Amino acid sequence: MIIDFHTHTFPKQIAQRAIAKLSHSAHIRSYSNGTLEELKHSMETAGIDYSVLLPVVTKPVQQEDINRLAIETNDQYRQTGVLSFGGIHPDNENYREIIRNLATNNIPGVKLHPVFQQTNFDDIRYLRIMECACENDMIILTHAGFDASFPGADFVTPARIRTAYEQIHPNKLVLAHMGGWGCWNEAEEMLAECDVYFDTAYTLSPMRSNSGEDVSAEHYSPLSREQFLRFVKIHGADHILFGSDSPWTDVKESLELVQESGLTPTELNAVIGENAARLLKLSD
Image (tube, rainbow, N blue to C red; front, side):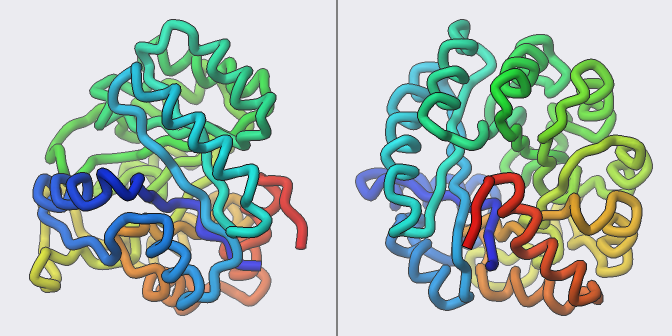
């Protein structure tokens, strides 16, 4: 079983506009039009069995529609191969009600994005959300590190992650982008003692501009294979999750980069599927 733990789609009516806006702000190309149909096509091409959608709530009022769609999506995941996390904003005062409703409706986790939500990860509002998610046995997945759309924004650096972790000790915290997009040295040093999961989304893949050329960006160069393997050794292959960050990378290429990274067959099977299946409580 191969599971892509980090993907994004948009409703058809806004997909073109959303992709264009994000591509422009981050100066990167997209590899699909951002719709669910295109994600399914990418899954077929790459041989992906399941993909996890990670919606981002950028305004508190968005959570209701986003979470309604997540519940509808998960009602059909056995047929489509697509599951969705729920979304929540740190300014949602009824966060307990939102999280309980998601858990009751079998949503496996919540996605946080401190950069797009303009809130420090160690803010009390996130700490309360994470504590409540843990009480409801939910996965917490957060963007980690810098973001190409907001160069230098330090809302979710490894230092902030470490501070939040030491206060909550969440047992199902997944750090996107191997713990710190564009600041992997700090992630390797500061998160070594944290019992957390890491996804590989947009780490081994090169950043490409709209013209398709490899580009460099502030705070960014791809994670080297050597450092990736050090992360695996430090945290264990059972704590690494394959993720593509579709539509911002080519799913097949992202998978191949992990497959060719130097992992042993046992480690590879864990990273590309077994760990995710365990967290999501899936079976063949």
